[in-house]
Length: 166
Image (tube, rainbow, N blue to C red; front, top):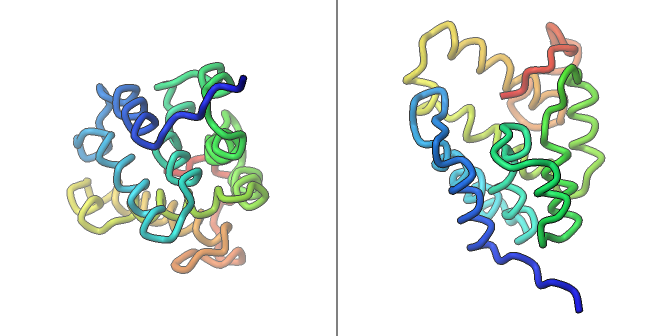
């Protein structure tokens, strides 16, 4: 008999626990970012699978949970694929990264919500001006490669090989 999938509440609890000691660039508890991304996915009409992926979107990348944990977790395969799609890989350029997101069903909505929260003017306002400018440009570059509103057109991209995305 197959194991039942984790509920959204269980996924949230796991994500919050995995990131409990992390802070974002503004010094806020990282779980606030996860909650905002999950809420953004929900507000944009995302599925339960996309909301679960939103809660876990940085877990593997930040080593909060291992790739092995994700592989073995009682989650639908599409959740695992979305999480891996939005997980940056060492040395990967932005074109490959954004291409993988675009090629993975459901992942674009997760990344769109992530970018929206990362680029929130209230969050950016507490950062040093140079950091705020750098991140604003980076988020616009990724949005452009993903074809999202507010992004730089491909012809305006300064350095599409830059692997940084958040």
